Length: 351
Image 1: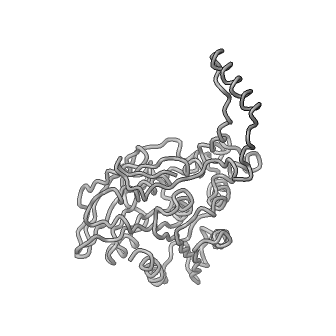
Image 2 (image 1 turned 90 degrees about the vertical axis):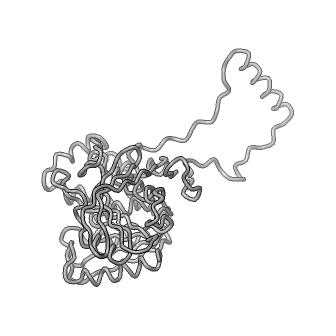
Image 3 (image 1 turned 45 degrees about the vertical axis):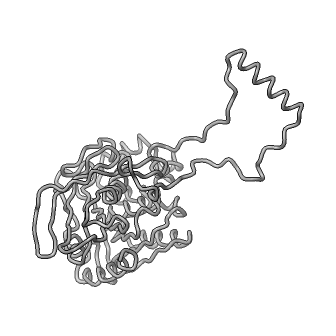
């Protein structure tokens, strides 16, 4: 994946992704004999004379446009972070309405900027599922927004496309909401590109919960190294078909039929479903990851986080799974203690 903010993006943001392998030294072409060289030259001359072009090796098969691999190959943009209306002022921070550009779309959100002398490390917050028809800007993680800003982090909570004042993407739901990953990547690039003195563009973390935890997984494989650390609370499954079977199919969501008409079922098109799972690409992750999940979560089974953590560990990645005894999906009595753990983790990597 290639990343850029404005046309003057830092070279350190460029992440090269190999889209095909042509082989190593063992596959080098043998030395051409003089006779073969003459034959090749004569053939080339004949092609020039007849106007035909020499044949070239076939290009690698392009990735399915709806896949994590396609996002890896895309040149992502994020810029034009704009602070709008002041929504709230506290002794610890000021809350703003914001917009930024991500891959050609304008995405809205809120930003909390701490009082005092910066620059401050920044966190991108990825919220869980809320029906876009009822969602309001900044909804979903108010406790985290407040606490993290009070403790010295610039907090950018992205609304995602199709939410609040963000631009629309009519195909996003059928395409398994992979656009949210683009919006999070764009948020980080916009923070780096902002030039604002309050923001330390070299220290950026990612924090997601529930569906946003799934966005965290996707982002780590699409843009390894973009963030300095990532946290996922009570994340959804890293296998999209499990989320469909768990959340949408039992409710008779008509979107399920649209998705399967477009992409096939896991039985009909297993390659597609492998391509949209971050577990397939676990080897790409380079950022430390903390997962926190309650043992009494009746919304997102703890088994999902156990599997994801195990796959990342087997790939040699820096991942820690913290199970929180008795906590449900939204965390209650032990939320503050869990945040102590989270902030200690973030401090190790962003302070």
